[in-house]
Image: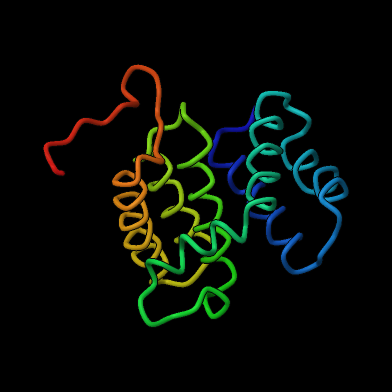
Length: 154
C-alpha cells in the first residue's frame, strides 16, 4: 500500500507527462499512476481524481497562481513548481477531507524533492497567499473533525 506522499508523487509525474508529452490522460493513467501505485484501489482513485481535475482545470489554476506571483508569468515558472502549485490549488479547492496545512506541507516536500533548492520556500509563500485569498473569497470548504480551521483574522 502506498502512502499519500507517494500518491502525490504519482500525480506530479502524471501531470508532467501530460504537460510535456501531451499524452492522452487515459494512457498516462495506465502507464504512470496505475504502475506507480500497483493498482491500490483507494490510492489509485485519489490519484486519478487529483490528476484529472488538475489537468481539466489548469487554466483556472494558472489564473489563481498568476494573481500571486508578482511581476512574473505562470509560463515562466519552473515547470515542476508550476505543476506542484496546480496540484495543490486543486487539492485546496476540491478535496474537502484534506486539511489545508497538509496540502501545503505536502506541496513543499514535493518541491524540495523534485525541484530547485529554493522551491520549497517559493511554493510555501505562493500557497500561503493563495490560501488566504481563497479563504477570503469563501472558496475553501473543508468538512470533518479537525478540518475546519477557525481564525480570528478577518
